[in-house]
Amino acid sequence: MKNYLDSIDREALRSRANQVLGYANDARDCAARWTDHAVSKAQGFSMFDFAVFKICMLSFGLWLGACFAKFFKKFRGILFVAFAATWMYLFWRIFFDDEE
Image (tube, rainbow, N blue to C red):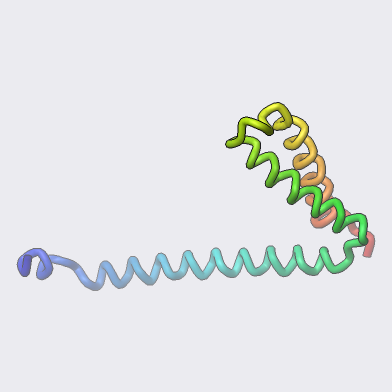
């Protein structure tokens, strides 16, 4: 065991760890920018927009649950269409609608 530990290039491991840490920091910064943008756009949402958001989340949860439950299997298509329609509306509202 001691011979194996002696053969490890600690500088290469440290370099790789710093590289991975840099990737993680870049991903965190990107997620933070996206979240800040989404939150700033959501501040301008109307009551209707929040209702659509709730329907979007509810229909996605039900659709996901329907994938695993026999009772809801026959409603999977309707639930997915409701999710897809509300998701597309919210995506448009957040990224492409420039009322301001």
